[in-house]
Length: 318
Image (cartoon, rainbow, N blue to C red; front, side):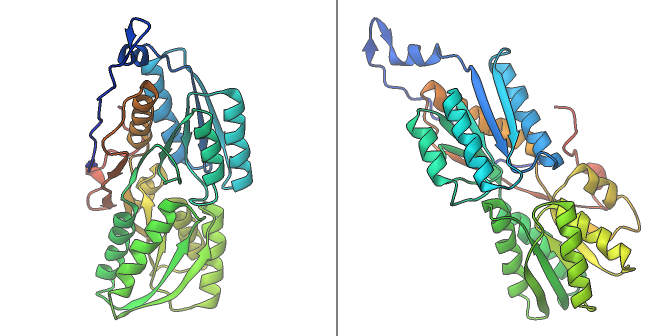
C-alpha cells in the first residue's frame, strides 16, 4: 500500500586490522543494548503504532534490549530534557520524533557528540543521522486536491495547522500550494494552531465557525485535528462541510465508513513500518555501516469511503 521511494543501505566498511580483528568484524560484534524513544504525544494512536514498530524491530535484533519510550507532549523543553536524560543513560540509539524542526538542533548535537546515533522518524530533525517519514508535501497536496475536486474548483476553505514540526509544516505547504493554484478557492483562515490534537482541532473549528458562516471545506494537518473539527461542526449543526486530514488512523477508518461523516478523505501513513525502518537504518549506523541515502520518503495513499476496504490500516497484522 505504501511505496518506499528510496531504501538502499550501504554496507562498505573499512577493513583496517586492529588487534587481529578487522573493524568490520568488531562492528558486527556490537550489541544493541538500549534505545530511547521520544515522540510528540503518546495520546495520539499514531505514536503508539510507531513505538510498536520500533519495539518489534529492536527485539528482533536483541530480545533483551532495553527500550525507554517517553512523550514530549509537543513541549520543546520537555523533549530537550528527555534527550539529555538519554545521553546521561548512555543509550545506543535515540529514536526521535522532533516537536520543533529547528530548535531541537542543540540537543541533537549533544547526543551525537556523545556517540549516540540519532534516527528521526515521521519528522526531520537537524543533524539527525537518518530519517524516515511520509512524503508530507504530497500528503497535504492529495488531501487538498480532493477538496478542490469536490468543490469543483470553487469555494471557501480553511486550514488547521499544528505545532512547528517538519511533517505538519510540509503538509500545510502542500495544501497551501494546491489552494493557491486554484483561483476559485478562497482561503478564509490558515494561521490557527490545533496543537496536533482532537481537542485542539475542536477548539479551533469552533472559533472558525463562529467567525465564518460560509466555510465549505477544512483541511486538518493531521487526523486528530480533523476529527476534532468534525465534532465541532456537528455540534453546531453543520452537515454540508468537507473535512480532510492526514494519517489514516483507526478512528478515521471508522469515520470514513459512516455515511453521515463530514470527514471525507485522509492521506494515509504507515507509522509501524516507518518507525521500524528508521530503527533499521539507525542500527546499521550503530554497526558502522553508512547508508547511501540517509532519508527515506514513503508515498501516502488517499483513502476515502470508496477505497476503504482496500486499506490495511495501522492495526493490520505484520
